[in-house]
Amino acid sequence: MGHVKDPAVSVIIPARNARAQLKYSLPNILGQTLENIEIIFVDDGSTDGTALLLEVAERKFPEKVTVIESQVGHGAGGARNLGLDIARGRYVGFVDSDDLVSPMMFEKMYNAAREGDYDIVDCGYDCEEQDLALVHTTDEMCGELNDEKRSELIVSGGYLWSRIFRRELFDGLRFRENVILEDADVLTYLFCTAKSIVNVKEVLYAYRNVEDSASKIVDYRNYVENINEAMRAVYERVFNLGVYPGVKEAVEYSIVQMYSYGLSMCQKAVLDSWRAGREVPFDVSHLQEALRETAAATVEGRYCDNKYVKDKIAELDIFLMELNNENPAAVVEYIKNNSDGVKGIVR
Image (cartoon, rainbow, N blue to C red; front, side, top):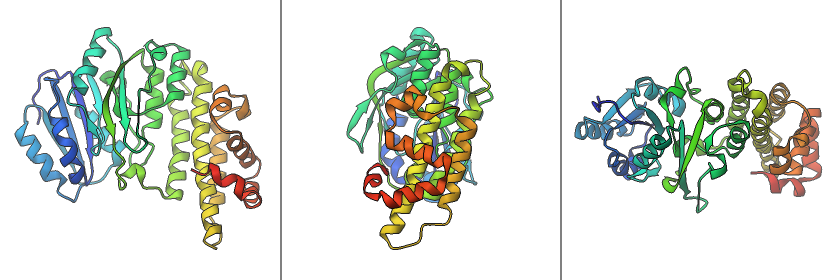
């Protein structure tokens, strides 16, 4: 058990069958230059020797490393919850076990947080697959948060792992377990409840594209079901908050964006079936209907009247979502008659 007194930052790292990835990422995690750091690994039901590797790390750095062993897999969200339950840091951060962090990441982010007593700090990250580096939180979004800045943060999106958060923001807040997209509603809620944010304009995190990680294994049925759940979760997290009227358009954009992804996956399933000479999977229409019902329950008005939707989502995507709202079967028929024009938008 870690014994850092009054840790500045608690870093929570879910690890499930991550032994090979941890061999690459562990040195920089354990070599953080922030002295009073608490590193919490959650072994989420691993069977590949991850537990042994983490046990060695805990024995070598007993003053700052804590390992939680769970025999039952909770998914990334549930594993983070176990870490949050024992975290003692003034701030909390999250690292995916297959990614690489700069040894100075948490020192630089904590220093930025303390300089202005900010609730959230965001840093730059490198995306290995797309060969790009960016900071989601622009200078214009920084400082004390108002409706406009909160909306821009929600629309910009981003990830948990490029940020640290004041730990009190997680009081009463936990992740959904055993799902993907488990951070969508949590991040939206944090943007709505935090009072301030700042950025560190340095690339301190490297996102790696490991093919067999949970977020990258795509089965259209599972993915669409998870999107549908995330759409509802985003709405349910924030619609009762006092700030909701001021960020409603941004929240609805994020829901519509997920709807677009989900419908695109259904289209892909249809096109893949036709190309392989198979019947369209029977559950595609059920998935489209579920997306339609969730969108109707969480988004008001016409999508093209939302300024963020109009600016950021393709007209064809908007058309297909509105067509699906009228009649899911009509979407399949449209794809059948316009497959050359549709296949380009299938992600």
